[in-house]
Image (cartoon, rainbow, N blue to C red):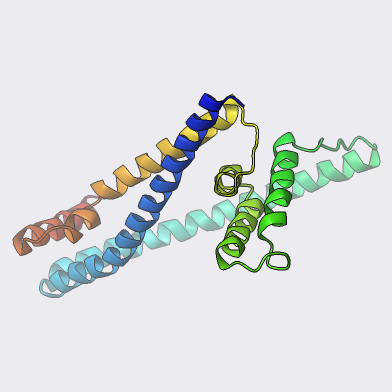
Length: 215
C-alpha cells in the first residue's frame, strides 16, 4: 500500500472512530431523554383525562394489530423453515451439498487478529493499555468488524493491505452513521431535550400527541 493510500485510510478510520463515538454519545442522550419525554407526555395527558382515554384506546388497538401481525409472521416463518429443511434433506440425500470456500476477508482478519494478539495478549504482555486493545480487537474479530481491526493495527503499527472495497465499506459506514445522527437530531425527543424554553417543550409534547392521534 502506497504512503498516500495509507494516509488516506488512516484519515478515514479516524473519521469513522470519531463518528462512532459521536453516534454512541448522542444515542445515549436520546435513550435517556426518551424516558423523561414520555413522562412529560403522560403528565400532560393526566391533566386531560378525555384526551388520555382516546390515546389509550388508539395505543391498545395498535398493540393488538402488531400482535396479530407478529403471529402471522411467526406462522409464515415456520412454513419457510419446514420448506428449507425439506430442501436440505433432499440435497443431503442426493449428495449435492456445496461447501462455501473460506472468505478472503476472514483469512485477512484472522491473520491481523493473531498479529494483534502477539503484541497485546494479557498472557504475554503486562500492560493495561495493550490488554485493552486486545479486548477491543477480540470484540471486533467476533463481530467480523474488519474496520475495527484496521484501527487497532494502526494503533500498534501493524501493516496491512487494503483494497477499494474496504475504502468503500469504511466510507459507507461513515455515511450511514452520519445519516442516523441526522435522524436522531431531527426527532421530537432531541428537540425537547435541547430546549430551554418550557413553552416550547410543551408545544413539542403537544406535537407528539397530535401525531399519535393522526396515526
